Length: 138
Ligand SMILES: Nc1nc2c([nH]c(=O)n2[C@@H]2O[C@H](COP(=O)(O)OP(=O)(O)OP(=O)(O)O)[C@@H](O)[C@H]2O)c(=O)[nH]1
Ligand SMILES: [Mg+2]
Image 1 (tube, rainbow, N blue to C red):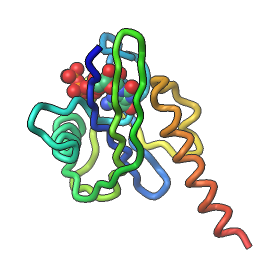
Image 2 (cartoon, rainbow, N blue to C red; image 1 turned 90 degrees about the vertical axis):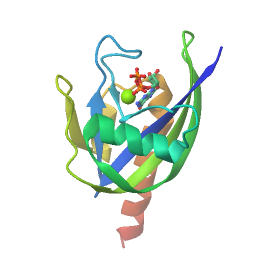
Image 3 (tube, rainbow, N blue to C red; image 1 turned 135 degrees about the horizontal axis):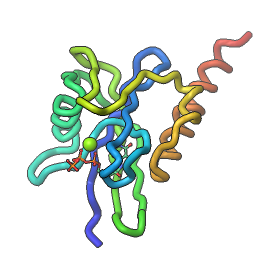
Image 4 (cartoon, protein in one colour; image 1 turned 180 degrees about the vertical axis):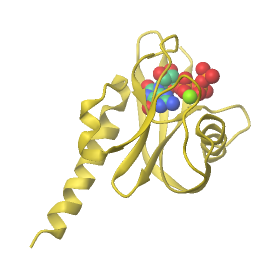
């Protein structure tokens, strides 16, 4: 089975992350996701992320860095998520028509249902937040 390469953006502002709900008819529909999409031929993963976030939520990414690489087999589909941390962007993130989106504090991310492949992303974000809290405590 061909592996689908996906650019995924963890858009972070203070300790909040922007998430969107996938339309019901899509693969893994009805679950929450980090915005992003499939890399096109002849496109770098950075360019794919810039394009997807512009198309999907109307922001212009100005700062992105690698966060983690995840390979997951859903049985009906194999994906490679190239997850990138977005800490700089211009414009105001807005959802597409008919799609819900929101800024969620990292400590509340576990209240939402994400595709199975996303678990390591949530765990890493929660771990990083905990490490910052521990450092700031006397
Ligand atoms: N965008 C996104 N896709 C994810 C996440 N987690 C995850 O398993 N995926 C999977 O990655 C695959 C590609 O994502 P996508 O459907 O957003 O691709 P796309 O925007 O190019 O859409 P299209 O080609 O259907 O128009 C889907 O099979 C989806 O289930 C996530 O957090 N964000
Ligand atoms: Mg998409």
